[in-house]
Amino acid sequence: MKKVAAHKAKLNKSVVDRIEPPAEGKIIVWDADLAGFGVAVTSLGVKSWIINYRTRDGRQRRLVIGRCDRLSADRARVEARAKLAEVDVGGDPATERRELRARMGRVPQSGVGAVGNWPAAATVMSLAAVGQLSTAVVIADLR
Image 1 (spheres, rainbow, N blue to C red):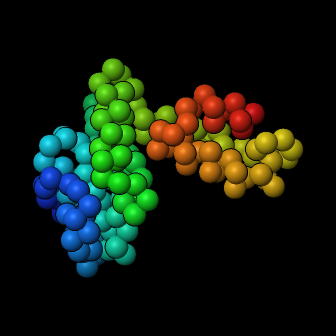
Image 2 (image 1 turned 90 degrees about the horizontal axis):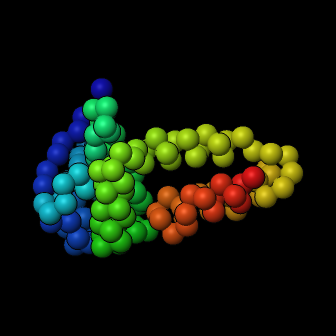
């Protein structure tokens, strides 16, 4: 079983940079201002922005917004607010991402999503994951 320790702080670059990786498992530091927003740090030192929420049917979900070395704290907080607002109106961003990835797993032999173009399709998905492209654009490009 994974060990997870949790703490609370006002998350910004300097706070995240000072978080030491645990010896094993992972730690989560939750934002003091935005409930459900935090940073997860693995024993390998990987730091990722996350949100934690409950769906309408009571299931707890955790969604990685992006890596801390690639996404600023301010940008991650904006994305977290948007995803949490989506949850407030009945959405489930983690399930939506899982379904999108499942659709992408069916790589056609020709066209935009062909094996030869797979890195481009993965880049489109990565951009969509951080809110830079709409899901509709991603799905249209992969068909």
